[in-house]
Length: 404
Ligand code: ADP
Image 1: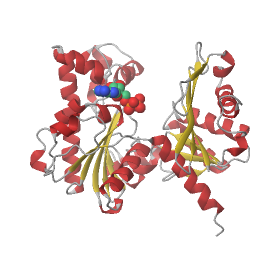
Image 2: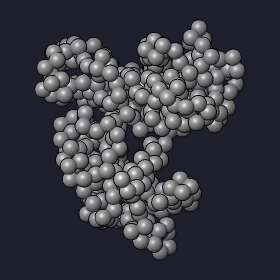
Image 3: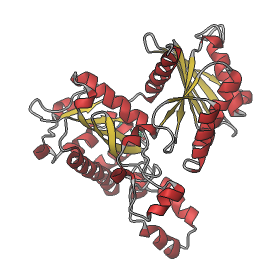
Image 4: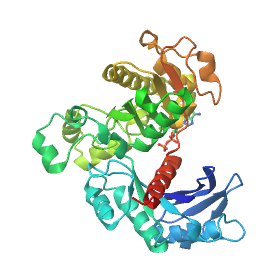
């Protein structure tokens, strides 16, 4: 089975084409700056050097971008399939499924309406996802389309985890609640961890730390998300590259008054000028922060400390909620690559049975980085949301073809 995974952003389109027999990526690519000037399309076939297209036809609209992708995939010289009918299914990453979608879903007209109904919850992301779906339906009529939601995995959270302590009427009226994001990543690494530990997922207590540009933590009990740090929006929780994470909400009113700012202005600051970038004033990238901190930049050092302390606090609270822990998982750009961050987070958690092996932690590509006598396994697992989307799409298509 061949599955195309599409991740449509407001001005970008990422894709990967999988051969599901081997789960090999046949081709992948990214179209950037769609609808803007100076866009480009980078296309990778297998492990070959990328080909770059800068023709404005490629990035004028999402429709153009998708047409260019399908053309590249079937092109005689650098394509990987002879015809688009070879694609058995398309898996779409969809940002928000609200309370409507608790798992990956075959897209029908009704499902598409449901995704549109969630636009008010993700006004920046869901419209782009809808465009991607509609364009694929137009260009590949008859090919099943599957939606995989960033929020779906967290729909198992109990009421006491997802309700905010504000008047209940706002939940009833506007569906204001914790949704959580990065669901596909948390689920993927949890499944990988179970496989690596050779234990059934439904017997494990896990904490998954997705630490990247956007960061979130998830408590996973018996394969189900029971709590997560992102909330109604991805702004809540850990301090991130440029997002503040959780702050006292009264700061918003205070800034509006003291800085004579508009509400939109404050929200822009909290989303784009805060986090480790806001504290350091240097960068949102941990590679830059680590380098500057090593060179004596105090605020870069503090920014890293604030981040690691916050992760540590979540680990403590999720340990309490899970009533124990089998494995602590680090994933995404920082989690997979920063030995320093992992060490700062784990230092001091030894009394909880979380004991890092410093040498293993520094070994590139090491998966288990805990000490032999650590009660809790500490694991570094590369996330692969695209593969999870492709697997989900495959599963749905196979189920559909089994006669009931
Ligand atoms: P996104 O949320 O955009 O998918 P990623 O998961 O790719 O983000 O994470 C990107 C971040 O990972 C970078 O901004 C950087 O802070 C961090 N990162 C990547 N490589 C390293 C490294 N070797 N050391 C420290 N941080 C790294």
